[in-house]
Image (cartoon, rainbow, N blue to C red; front, side, top):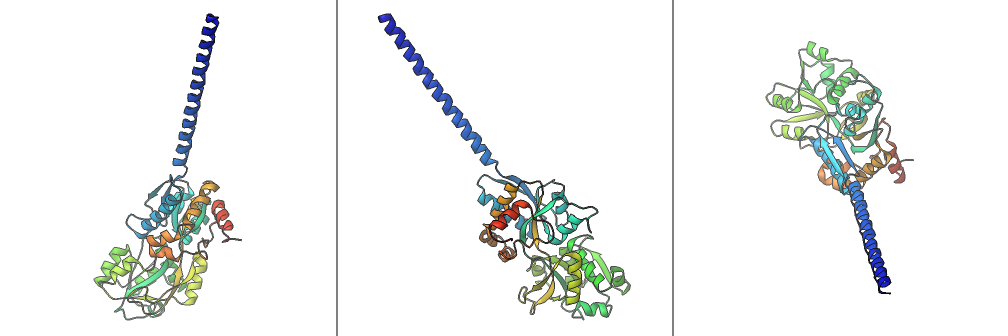
Length: 343
C-alpha cells in the first residue's frame, strides 16, 4: 500500500507541475500577444507629409496637420519633410511620399499634366482643404504714379516687375493675368520696363531701394513678407477687374476672392482678386481606413489648428471639402459623407 501511495503522490506531483507549466506557457503567450498588439498599436499610423520650405508659413501649416493626426492617434509616427507648392504633387503622384500640401491650382495641373508639368500624375487624390484661400496679391510702391493694373497696361507704363521662378504658382498666375490683357513679359520690356525672376525677400529689398516697382504672388493674408516690407516702405495693393478675374479663373481653376480692408495696415478698401485654396493630397493607393482616420483627425482638431496659425481659423464645414477638380480619396469621401458634408 505504501508503494501505491508513493506512486499516487508522484503522479499528483507531476500533474501539479504540468498544470503550472501549462499556465506559465499561457501567460507567456498572452504577454507576447499583448506585446504584439501594443507593437501594432505603436505603428498603426506611420507616414510622411511633404510641405513647404523650412521656416516658411507652409512648414507651419504642415506641422499643424501632422500634430492634429498625432493628437487623435496616440502611437502615430508622422514625419514632416520640406517641399514646395509645385514639387509636391509629383512627389505624391509617384508615391515617393504619400501625403503632401499644394494649391488646388497646381494639384489639378499635375493631375491633368498641364503647365508646369510635362506629364499627368493621375494617382493623386485630395484629402481636404487645409488653408481655404491663398490670394493673388499685386503689390506696388505707394509712390507709383498709377493706381491700377488696367492703367499700367493701357498706358504701357515702363514698370519694373518681379515674379517668382518660372513655373511657380504665382508666376503662372501673373503671366496669365498679363495674357488676359493681351500682354507678354516681352511687351513690358519693350515699353522700357523689366521682368526679373526673384524670391520675395530679394524683391522687397529691391523695392525698398526703389530698384523694383511691382510684384505679384499667391500667398496667405496677411503675408508675413508683405507685413515686414510695409515696415520699410509704403505699399499699395491693386484690385483685378472682374473680366480678368473670370478669364484667369476659368483657365487656371481659380476662384474669385476678396481681400478685406484692414488685412494690412495700409489697406483701406477691399481688393478683388483670385485665390487658390491649399489642400492635402494623398496617393490613391493609401488605404481607405488610413485616409479616413487622417481626414477625421484634421476635422476634429480645427480649434487646435486655429491656435497654430490664423489662416486655419477660416477652415469651416462649408469650405473644407472645396478641393477643386482633383478627385477626393475614397477614405476622405467616406468621412465627409458620414459627417453630412457631402451628398
